[in-house]
Each structure stands twice: as C-alpha cells, then as structure tokens.
Image 1 (cartoon, rainbow, N blue to C red):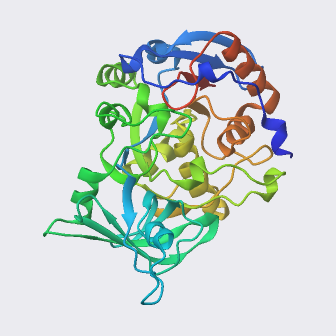
Image 2 (image 1 turned 180 degrees about the vertical axis):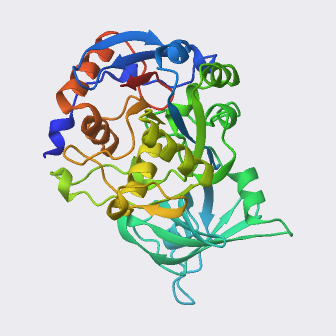
Length: 365
C-alpha cells in the first residue's frame, strides 16, 4: 500500500500545543469499526460507553527527561599547530541529544543534532560537566550509541533527571516547561524508560479509573518503552518497505492471565493506546503456533501493523489522533478500515477536534 493512501489535510491550528486545564476534559470521537458510523462525545463519558466487562490494558511506562543540550568536547582536533578558529569552534559547538532506547548499563541509542559529522570516539559535555557522553558506535536510522557517565558521585539516571528536558514532539512548537513534567506523564506511570508518552493515557484521572472499576471493567498494566518505533516517520513510498524500530516491553503474569480469561469468557480487550496494541499483538504473533496466547515476560516488539495484518488480541481501541502518513495511522486503519478512519478524521478536523499528543481522544469499537 502506498504511504500517500494514509494522508489527510490538517490545518496547523488544530494541533494542540498545550494540554487542557483538566486531563479528562477532552472530547472523544466514537467510531464503529464495522459500520464506519461515528458520534461525538467526551472522555468523561468513557465508563458509560463501555459494556462493563472489558479488560482494559494500559501502558504504565514513565517518560524520561530524554532531551539533553550540551556541547562537543572538541577531542577531534586538528594536528598540533593548526590554529583554524572555525575548526575549533565547530569541535566545541552546541549539540542536542535525544535518548531513544536503552541498550545497556548507561548506554543509549540516541539521535544527535547536528549529527552528520559526529564520529565514534567523540565526547559530549552536559551542564557544568556533571554528565559526559562518549560515542561508541553508529546504527541504523542515523542513531549513535552513547555511553554516559555521571560526575561528582551522582548516577547517570539522577543527573539525567536534573539536566534533561521533557521530549515534546516537534509539532509542539514551544520549549518544554515545568508543567510538562507532570502533564506529559499518565497518572499511572510508574516504571520503564519511555522517550515519548503513551498519549491515549494522558486523559485518565484517578476518578475516571475508579468509575471504570465500579462498572466492572478490569484494568491491567504492561510496560512498553515508547521510542523510535512509535514516532519514526515512514520514509518509504510503500508501507511494506518501512523498517520499524524495535521497542522493549514487559507483560506481567497478572496481565497475561487476565487477557487469557477474557478470551475464554468472550470479553473484549480494550487497548489504551497504540503502544498497548503493539505489545499485545507482538506477543500473540510470537506465540502464533500456540494459538496466539499472550505470554508473560520481556520481549522486543518488532511488529509493524498495517491493513491486511490480523488482530489476535485487541477488540477495542482508545487512541489519540495521529499524524498523516504515519505508522500509527496505518495501525488504526488496519483496525477500523482505512476509509472509515479517514472519514472520521475529516469529520474531526471539521468539528475542530484537537489533534496529536495533547489533543482529543478516539474510541473505536
């Protein structure tokens, strides 16, 4: 399928730049995945709109302050006696590093900007020297593997917490501020090392979660560390040519057991966000020889879901509105049908819904 088949027109003013004052004040578009019929609602009605016997699966990944600003240490200098001022300035220039995926103790795959001329062996300095990074290698997607070291007796994780910035997406055209440290996290974020929020969960409050449980809805958790696989643009002309980046996930025993009970009892599984879909469907695909059972444990999600791929676990999906020509929009189209989704999106644009990470929600049943 051509990537251009998943395009739609979105005026820039429809992209939410800040969250609403109250998490659960978002609007919500309901879409019937079989008929394509949609209806306008609001997120606070979610508990009343569900059957009451669902298993709702949420991603409890915590977003790291994963954007770092520093400078090059200038170790790749010209031979002694070369006094080229431009060369010296370049070697100590400012640098931006976005953590993408943890690959070892204090080692991260990263995106570096500007990074085209950053070789292995280059060192970066952050803050007043409290944190240093050394480039150990290059990878696919323009990634650099960097090993970090904290100074003055502080751990890397502690220093990242102080120096790092919340990694707001580039379509949010402002710098992060103190409020984003709270609002770009779900209320149930507790573990992991995500570098982007599982944004469908940003609408939930403790009150909404309580009302869902009161309706008889079982809420269980998994952890998928949201990374490049979620937000990397599709650069191929055809969907099949897109190579998706792996993301780490962990499914607890209690979550796997709840999903298996729901399967036996013919109860719906509601995925709160596309990251939950990716983890559950990847786990089921890895066990396709055993009937698609979702097994507990840790794994790497390599699955790319687009129209034509089967869904083995998820029956309902709560999600935000996604970018045109993105892998996430392709996943939603696979779940509800491309024409159904694009028609619903056009309605959402006309009805002035708020789009993307801090935007409104969509419930597909």
